[in-house]
Image 1 (cartoon, one colour):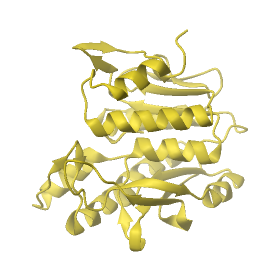
Image 2: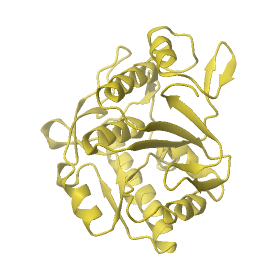
Image 3: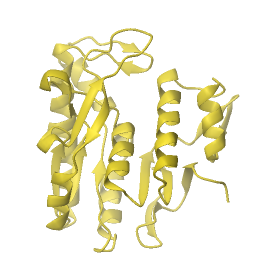
Image 4: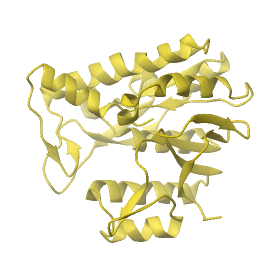
Length: 258
């Protein structure tokens, strides 16, 4: 669940209602971001921050705020919203029981500080919670070099977790209508098109995002999922076909076009 979607009115309530309709035999795991809330908290505290290649530079001062917001505030907003709908949920982060171990992310534009890319996933805690019918709500804060907290992009964390957990479906909830190519918004693209666009700067977005999609595409091909979707929050959240779809209108990012 992208952090920017949390700003949309009623999204958390609608999201919790949709999760409540998932059949009990289908396990659900939630991974979330919270970039806008991080920015607001840093500004509130008078701490300056910059971006490199579209990623927030996270130094010693910033990483503490990032962990506080993601693991302490946003994580609990989501778990409380689920609890309000009588869904058993537990808010955790990638640092708990070594769920996510990350390496330092290196980009051409400069030093990002404590920003990482997930290197390994330990699903022990997930299995423990799911065995007790508890929905894990996961902040992407991860264990990095020297056991420091590292911030990891939530989309990347969700993809790596889906791969390690051997998930059937990976669903992204977003407020982005699609991929802009030559000024035109495309709501659906095929796997081959993603690969091409990641190789050539045909679409609007940061280089880091293009590389990230290419890596996730490679992982998807190595361990195919039934579906990888991006779901729009400006459409009513609705469960269809069991746990297959959470909104009426969705955007397919990976996989062949129908």
